[in-house]
Image (cartoon, rainbow, N blue to C red; front, side):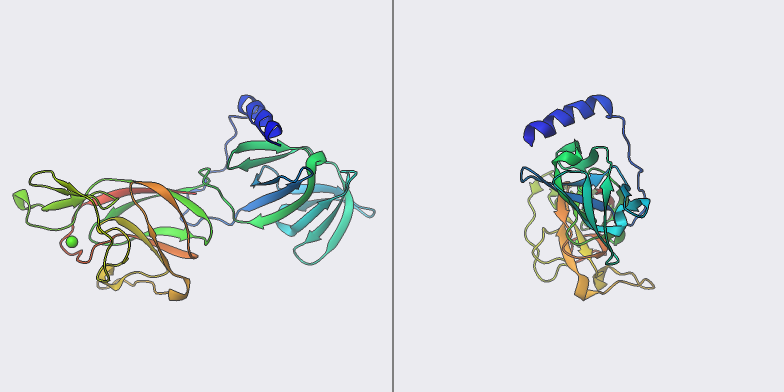
Length: 279
Ligand SMILES: [Ca+2]
């Protein structure tokens, strides 16, 4: 399988490197379909398909079955006939005439010929961070902003920059200390940098880095909700994630992601971080 994959990847780099996917700039990560392929040699490959339907000739009709209507497709040993389990419980058998399936996987774009496939499962979600979509947000040190909807189990990548003032009393009436998105604080008097500590219970996200960029799913901390605004409180679908300068996280819950500075007192904060989240 490896040699197949590598060969295909090299070929594809030459031939289809210009392929672009519809960029999704909405705040909500859409429900994407992934295909999980079981191959004859025992390999299991998951990726986002370049097709939307599968052409099938049954005894009674010729049709294109949309992937979103398929649960599982089993390919027989002749690699021409297949049986389909559909989302609505229907079952179909037919002859398939398919080009190799293009899949965008974690190790690149591959094409897999039907002759190698034993079974295909259609699964919803499953973006792998190949930049299907992104969200850019400016996060103020003294408030919260919406970071879009996240889906439990899906991985998201983040990058953030800038410095947020986390107190007052510094030179020229400015902050005494500024923090980067990792929570590393820099003295505005002598430039000394100090690593963050795990936050205690007074902070919005106990256990995560003090003064760092964090995400809260399902709940907006009341200390960060300005008067006249409404926070969210869905503790059944909640969780917290450590964000920072660069990295990734797997969403522990499905819901709105609220971005904020993990500070116990935010009324004396100033400045913003620039944040980019992609999936
Ligand atoms: Ca503060």
